[in-house]
Image (cartoon, protein in one colour):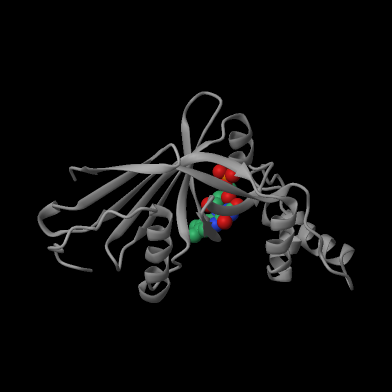
Length: 203
Ligand SMILES: Cc1cc2nc3c(=O)[nH]c(=O)nc-3n(C[C@H](O)[C@H](O)[C@H](O)COP(=O)(O)O)c2cc1C
């Protein structure tokens, strides 16, 4: 971790490119999964709920994660697409906050990613009704997994229609860097027309 870097973060034209370069740094430097992020969604009652997800792609249109559309997060995003993601890279002393609407990825994009997953993960996407109550405990889950594995025996596992990706279209993004004495650096970008306006925030 850099100790109170003297040089301020330079203002960039495209903060998504900066995020991609921070992610590349994290892939080199972080000891634990650099793709982990905390995703917050909003429930019908206006209350937030948060959980970890893996950010599998970052491109000009946003940040992509994959999940079950019938899970709690899936239902909440259907009712209210506004979402927030927080990424923490502790070795680098960096945090990124992203806010924006979640848009389902295309079927082609979801199929492509699903096909790249290990077979066990593909089977569990069918076998686990994510976020539902498991009345029969872990035995029920194992049974569902074995039955699903049997159904797909000898053939590829296709993507369930209830399993896809969401892309958070970045409306705001804030870069945070650790500095000593809690004099951390914060640089926020907010979409403005075709470009971005930026502002430095007190830590
Ligand atoms: C590091 C980490 C990464 C995770 N990544 C995902 C993910 O990419 N997609 C997913 O559906 N759940 C992921 N999970 C599980 C979720 O945190 C959560 O338990 C699950 O999605 C159900 O959330 P929900 O009931 O709010 O929908 C991850 C958990 C951890 C600890």
